[in-house]
Length: 194
Image (cartoon, rainbow, N blue to C red; front, side, top):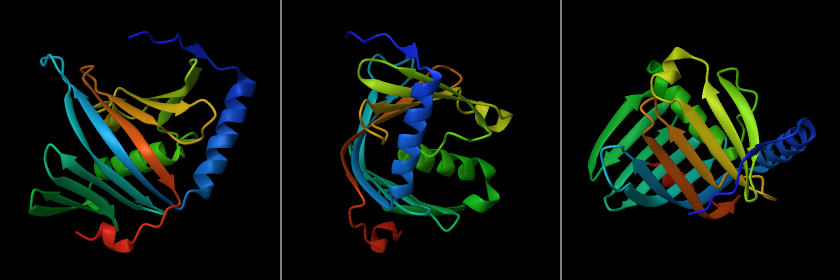
């Protein structure tokens, strides 16, 4: 597959891009989207592919619902993380776990694009013929343990993220591609019930 070369954005391009994304992020009250997730592990010849739906409701409700090849959901709500693994339910108090809190903030921020002034990352801006790409390198040891780099892909002309790539210290990575995004569509609170 041919990928167009990435080049660094100029200061004026960065400024215009950030303004556009931040304006869009402020207007997002809810988001519904399908996603396909690719988990790349160096010891496997083929990426592990899962898919499902993601729901986001401002200010801090988030649900990932995996539907294929298995049923699994994870809900971030009221500082708690609710997991339903094919009917087996568990709850984690995210308030007690700074790591879960950071992961939630990172996910919500990367989906809404509201990440640019985070003191926890060094951010670089690139563009290709198809995407504006922001590369976030963690500054804190806590996050560096799990994530080496986060890449966010915004299609040129759009202000919401189309792909998120989380690269681990081992260079294994998870890539999430969003499809059929619906901004500010009605999302019932019941979606976030455990």
